[in-house]
Image (cartoon, rainbow, N blue to C red; front, side):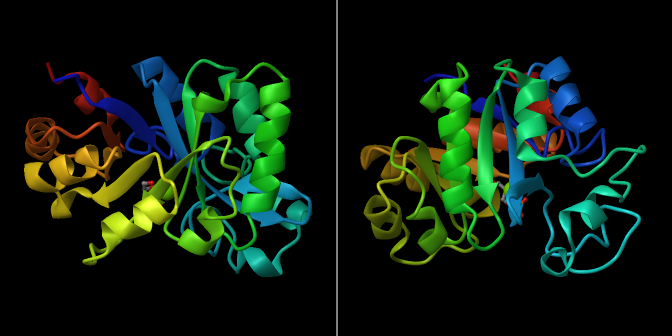
Length: 227
Ligand code: G3P
Ligand code: MG
């Protein structure tokens, strides 16, 4: 059985302000082969931030959908950094690891399709991207050129049908729902089984033992440390 891949969640969220350039750089320094980030479309830009509002992760307040790009960029997202654009994160990473783009905001699939096409024209490979979402309607609009990850909050009886209907590459589960039986079911159907967000060493160990294909962690070094 091969080792699960390690995916730095929002970069290396346990060590740096989440979804910032310093967080992605730190994830690479720790040795992550993959990082995960969350995107919203604001005007013609894609910004990298997790919540619908800026309250938790910046020195500002308010809904992203009610702010201009310039207002968003004037905020401090931690350690004096701006909320990054997807272009900035991709330029920083520059092929040093692969990227899971999670579609968080409304109408993000189209702009992400265009952005990934541009990056692939600049030398990135299509399989260096995974596009995921809890919003399966939005995910269904993502370009089939790129891998799709069907995210699940809670497991429903039809999770496998949902993932297969999406032609997903992976099913991305809350680790608390996961055991080896679920992993086998996904893998037998041709899906990778990824689990989020696993931070405690005993939980990471349990996911290794369950045979998952990938682990999202705020502390990617803890995943990388497991033999
Ligand atoms: O994609 C894994 C994980 O990021 C999904 O949950 O809320 O952290 O975006 P969330
Ligand atoms: Mg996410």
